[in-house]
Image: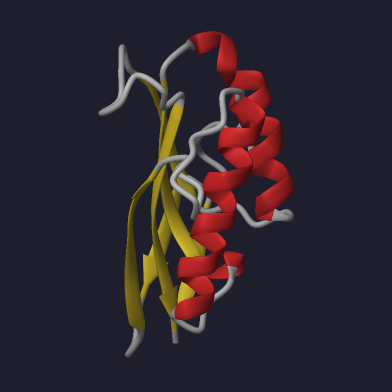
Length: 128
């Protein structure tokens, strides 16, 4: 069982996330490794928009393979290489989350494992 936690005693989330996610009962838990924008043909798109699209499609594929959907995500950790990317990233993320608000962390880093990567997203999902 999932319960999204957004206490009234603290500031409301300022985006598509929840402050906490409580998991109880007998559930299946899925950890999704950090996804970067490597297409199935091995290419890496240049733009942030295209990289985000590839990453979210990869995440959806992993969720689907496990019998889950975007609504089963309970936590997302996102890494960007520039603060100027935040607005675009948040818009694309909101489109894929479809109103679902998992717990979320967004970090700006100086670089990822390959200089072509502009963004990386990892996640955790749960199904009862």
